[in-house]
Amino acid sequence: MADDTTPHRTGPGASGAGASGAGASGAGASGAGASGAGASGAGATGSGATGADSVSPPGGSGPAGGPWTGATGRLSGLGVSQGRAAGPVLRMAGPPALPAPRAVTDPDAEAATVSGALESVAADLNRRAKAAGGEAAEILEALAMIAEDPMLLEEAERLAREGSDAPHALDAAFTGHREALAALGGYLAERAADLDDLRHRAVAFALGLPMPGLPDPGHPYVLAAADLSPADTAGLGPDVLALVTERGGPTSHTAILARGRGLPAVVACDGIMAVGDGTVIGVDGGTGEIAVGLTTPEAAEVNEADRARRARLAASEGPGRTSDGHPVKLLHNIGSAADLRSEELRAEGVGLFRTEFLFLDRKQAPSFEEQVAAYAEVFRRVEHVIVRTLDAGTDKPLPFLGLPEEDNPALGVRGLRVDRLLPDVLDTQLDAIAAAARETGTRPEVMAPMVTTVAEAGAFARRARAKGITRVGVMVEVPAAALRAGRLLQEVDFLSIGTNDLAQYTFAADRQHSSLADLLDPYQPALLELIAMCARAGREAGKPVGVCGEAAGDPLLAPLLVGLGVTSLSMAPVCVPLVREALASLTFEQCRERALAALE
Image (tube, rainbow, N blue to C red; front, top):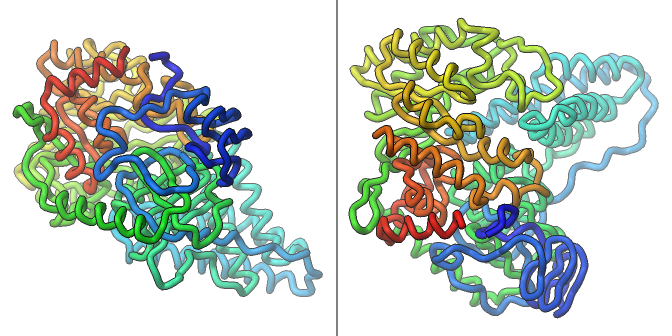
């Protein structure tokens, strides 16, 4: 298989007989996103289509899968959250229209409206955060912090006092901030998209309109949108059966929060906004397929099958292993103790404790005592915990760090590299982790993000061990680390592969660029080869090598990773039962066969 193919997910665009352009039908259709017999054009798939290989791996379209039947048309995107659902589609309304500028007679009053709008947006987000809890709360709190940015307020108030009405002052201030972030690329470009949602909410307040929100039809539905903000995704009610967006990637907030909720989700789906409201569609969050024009009985059958699947998975428990007993640790990714809900504690520990969420809304670093308390709360509840030290920098800016802006922050000072400028931050964190371990009588493990060289790994390991932390590892997120995995393991006790960043740096493709989503597909052979190199180094050293990226929670990919030699998989808690079931259905040799086939 060529390195530029994607053997699992179909790329953005329509597929299947009867699809044409944006959701229309007709065999032999052509044009962007069209497919079918003889289809051609960007994103075409199906008989006669050219482009990325769209063959699914063994096992069909995933749990409760099988081909769609009865649909009059097909669309396809990137499946980012497993499961199937069907129902009438409702498209999310666009942002409030900005009226023509009006004459201002009281600039101070306009400035006060600007301030009130930003305060209201921040208050609303903080209220939603308290109601949401867990990872959703952490994302919403980070957005509230952006709305509270004094530089944003200062710019909007300045424009108002110079004669702009409040809605236009807010629009211009947000636009300026957005353009600055978008120019930086990478993680900050994703934050630029978040600014659009904040701008829409603030402008709506200034116009005296309700803040933009989700449809509320009073019955279950599939939500379609050009894109979803974190605030919208976190506020999804029980009536939402599935999510489909035109934009987004596998590591977008929509994808992460949908997985956390267990909602089937497809992103980067061209044509979804052309499907009329009320049309019954089916969504397969595993394969990325959208079936347009299902009948009501067909939709009911899809949902009943998925309810049965969820009930079966809810009863799943026990350690991860293949059908012939090969052990694979199944672990959780968390941001704080709030993510450890009792009903989800069915994994074998925490494989990724993202400590940066403790730092997100701070203008000053959390104190040593605050950090000890936060870490101890997790250590008391879970015996096995791997703590990732602060993963921030110019690509994920935190106000208290005070790092200068960079032209290319994704390739700049981030992760462990922050220690080059601010060594006290890491020292305090390691001291706090060690103190929390002593307080709780536990033995947490610690790993550093964005490690590139053997020298960096060795220096970090010596420093952590000097603090009293006995087991030390590093994350493999760049090809340079994967290529030197054997030497890294001479310095540390384990490796944890972050597939999201490793794919981004291997293929030179921005994680947030939806049109490059095929390059970030975890089935890309070049990415799998790097994972295999790390696993091979682990076997030779007799040390564990895990995966903690989004790929670990994919039940179709997990057996393949195990076949490559990965010893643990760390994922969102909701994914654990799916992966446990997938592994239990195969022997270790079958996993190895899948891995070898994927590398060809």
